[in-house]
Length: 467
Image 1 (cartoon, rainbow, N blue to C red):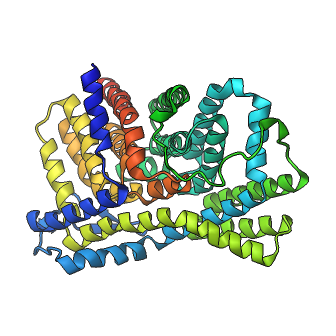
Image 2 (image 1 turned 135 degrees about the vertical axis):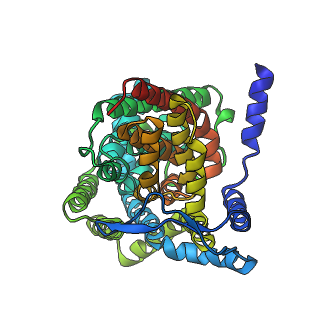
Image 3 (image 1 turned 90 degrees about the vertical axis):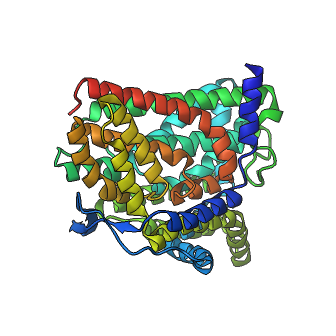
């Protein structure tokens, strides 16, 4: 047992730096453009978005990516991801102003003081579920501004930045990925399958809450481990500047100015939610509101022009590494488009599913969606690219359309926990200053457990003809 654990630890310690990992994937995708045939599906517009036509795959002239184009894909990736890159910077600026006003530190210090340090585990569980429910109801990138608060809270409890990511990023990714009302995966899938919108919610809700419970348990377990032996922390050496409490808990209280800053932040979030659900706001509108919140926080805190300017530049400096990683990761998507191999990968994976036993086909379909997710990280984009192929294939295998969509949701949603090409994941990890290589070392064990829980749900779905 000790030898086995030692070998697992050795495996995780060999996970390369995030930059190295992503550059390795860039090289791999470039090589695949020479190995795999270029191919494409015919597409039709559905509500203004391009969807695949089943049985329309055909090979086309190969478009292998040369050395110059491989490096050219990097600036093109930054161009394609500019909206997400800027929301990382805007979120960092907003948090920088809130931190400068001491509102976040005083709020977290007061919260921990009132709840008591004897309830640390309970706080971790509650916050994991709160962040998870934000993912279920609000969305993914929409919650980016909430991540730094988890960082301050985790450090106040005696945890580290990895725990902060588990509480916030882990929970929100699970909540969003397995949400019974996810408009991008379940909503798009039900529309393509001509099923009642968000039907089959009971099984999805049970799966989502069970997965969040497992994440909460894992967070508490990790917290206990590093509390007992700080040398086992995966967050050693990470930048915790301006995130730690600066005075004893007993001295914390919220001032009138703190309440004003917190009120501006909450009103800004409510305004964002209204805009998202009623005016179809997305990344650029969120960035604009973040900047407005930052400006208002500076004004009510009576910062002068020089202080506000210095706060902007300091905040951008802290957020810049994460913003860079978002653009760098998006280069992979650009390479796939250059080489025209995305549809080929989807087609070949669908062929591999044919002839499998019923239960195995449901699990294999979910695994194939996980693989595709690394190349098409957009939930709705993946649904439009793969479900028109997978739905009829599933029916030919004996799977109901609801089961096919559940398999797709599980494959897409849980693989997002370790997907280096997902801009939203990289962006949120950057907000709590956690590189993806450290994150993978932390999240991988619980990901295996979550997949086991999800595959059990799929088996139940097949056994009960979930429809």
